Image (cartoon, rainbow over all chains, first blue to last red; front, side):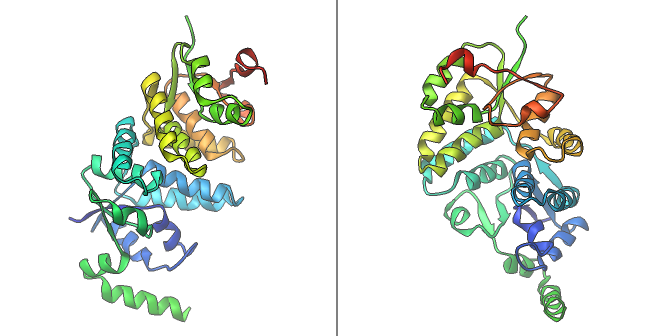
Length: 156
Length: 137
């Protein structure tokens, strides 16, 4: 079964907060246990922080709980993850520390593919591969559903 | 017996804003026994330096903390505790409640933090004001 990390943008995209709702297709696949979709504690915190600072913590909590319950598992963040993120930084000084800690968590949990819209950082890392949504949908033979959902969204 | 104490790294940020450098602040507390922080605290140090365009220095200082104190991981257990705290303190900052969750789960009552933070509103813990004791601010 395919194993991927889902970044904190995925539930926001899926709930139409910042983009297009067909990311929901992937989350549904995770919920149906057809894909193993993981996230980490810091990604979950990013959701709460984002909504707290725009005075919409209630909305943030709803998305936080939904995402928390959908994912296959939530990775802890350990001091060893921090150590690895520092090692990665020494080799890739242009990548944001935020991306590096998520990458470190993935690597330490043997998952090296991440579904993320944050391209510039992850694309420079050799140790982790960023997957784009259309490519993931295609690899899972979900492209038709994806197009179908897009049409439905554009009609609504 | 000395009580365990948690360190929120916003303590360093506050001192820095008041002209006291990181090393000076670290020297003031490094001999304090039973001082702890968590991995989010380390990441927050790096993040704050990154905002000033000094990521490298941020990692170096975070590693000083890493090598001086015990660092707790953050697990799903802390998320569950944070969830209860969010219900009880709906206006509190999520980041502060996550640190409090680490404290509760590791049986720590005292916290050293910036006076600008809101920990004093959390009944489960006690803010230890050491800034007046060590610094002329």
